[in-house]
Image 1 (tube, rainbow over the protein chains, first blue to last red):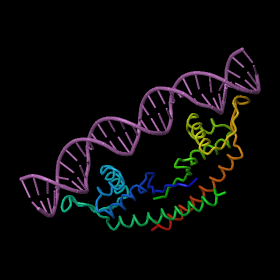
Image 2 (image 1 turned 135 degrees about the vertical axis):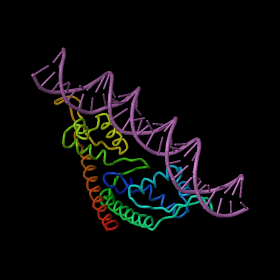
Image 3 (image 1 turned 180 degrees about the vertical axis):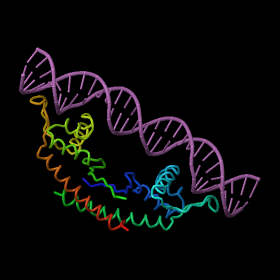
Image 4 (image 1 turned 120 degrees about the vertical axis):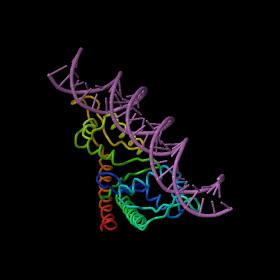
Length: 110
Length: 110
DNA sequence: AGATATTATGTCTAGGCAGACATAACGCGG
DNA sequence: CCGCGTTATGTCTGCCTAGACATAATATCT
């Protein structure tokens, strides 16, 4: 028996930042393109692109700097804002995880 | 902007206890029947019954004591085990909620 | 010019699952 | 003995959405 959780941020009742886009941003940071990040998470580029697009629109923040064409066909990099969101969410999520495990131990370990 | 979360328990990779069944148990405790509990949550009896059934099967624990027919047609009440699960999950969830809000404040209040 | 890997975006479809529908059995009360 | 409100299950359908598919544009390098 183990605890699981999901945590995300909403604005005006619609989700704006969660695990999905977090992983994508991580992947882009590591691999240099949305395409590669999508592949590394076993999802289609189309899906990944839509996810990021929607997040940017809802946040009203540009998370990635894109380059179309060029050396290696193009790519994407985190903007300063993107890096901040990534880092804040990482800590947020980590703190919650710790709390979930502690609460689980307190209430369900017999 | 506000934080949201879900928390549940899994065993062998399949979910066994979460928000849904928690609310149903609360409703049964308050209203005395699965049917009434379902209505109070705007779901069909069929759905509620299946939910509880699955949870009991996976946990291997009888959560409700049922009566078919009789005064008022029948009804259901929490077993001792059911009441314990309810109470443990309630505290667990409440503690996590507090932690989520604290973590949110720490990382996203500007 | 052509090849290439990418970003960018519209559209379609299959499949799963939530919820609806149907039906039976039960026990009490009038 | 019938009606009522419940538990208990099997089945079906429609809807939604995740993912597939298609296509265009772009800049660099050979």
